[in-house]
Image (cartoon, rainbow, N blue to C red; front, side, top):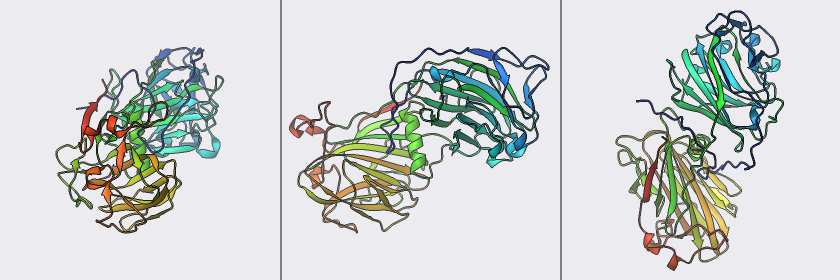
Length: 476
């Protein structure tokens, strides 16, 4: 059964990654554009009055049914674009249908926002700045996948083969207040309402020079790629899907997975978590007194503890390609040196807000590195671990932890011990949050005035409860 991802009313503000996206909120200006549909039913002449040919290589042709781009290969690409050029000032959604039939790179289809001119220095793709676009690839190019590009920066869409030969419909949504563009694909489109099979990418439009004189909706190709049924309509904008704030005695936890989205590293995990934080994908949210999770159907050895709670989004069978984000506030009673140890199957990152790691060691799969307040091991394997040493004053510190599972066994753990350690010492390390065993205490998120509630008045009864307040968010 296909899962409908498209839904009106979504937004952007993700606490659910170690690379949180943030966008300025501002009053939305008047958008001087036309919303329209075009079915290319004319023969011969360029349809009007809403479209124009961009810088010309080989002109598009019209046979009364579709627009065809007959140029020869990569360097014969051309584009049609809207005459109106201020689509950046307000919200809009644009859709178009395209048919791919091999042709190598020249047979790719392009759909995006910006100038819409071919860039000669890069195979005449529509990279003339500014530009944000999706490139759908035929089966004989790049495995039939898709790429989203913000000016010259490409991001391969998760899940191989999301396009390929056939007829597909692509949707582009833009939110002016959040300055975000999201691309979706309805693969093997057979008519009717748009139903997204996958999200191709989320791109930040805030920093690439789009303005009221260069923001046109454009599309095009070469090698006889065809397009049909363009629509550009008003869009309501994105609605927030924020992670609940941590509470006393527990981490706030989110897990996200999406069919066809393969997670190979932390960047992929952050991308998936951002999609959920922006409201584009469902997430499983809850609370946990520790980070100590396993897949009961394939524990991968279970780490140091050997046991744990089921992952929040656990399903029957071997769970693959999901990401977890946890956020908590840890209380340091005594100033000094501490070692945080995280181990999992597969990779992780741990951010300690307000301090920097002194050193890092690992003795497992992959390589753990540090960058300021971030300790990260993007490896895959049954023993991806890292010992991060840090010097802390007494006080409360925010932890942000991200984990991903690629395939096979799955577990993850987060421990801490006083002093400097480079190997796991069962007499020293305790799970963060396991106060009954001597672990560091988790307290509630600071209030709006920055104060931390006293534990005695901040739900001490929650300590030791493993999966509290579990809830499942789904799109309509």
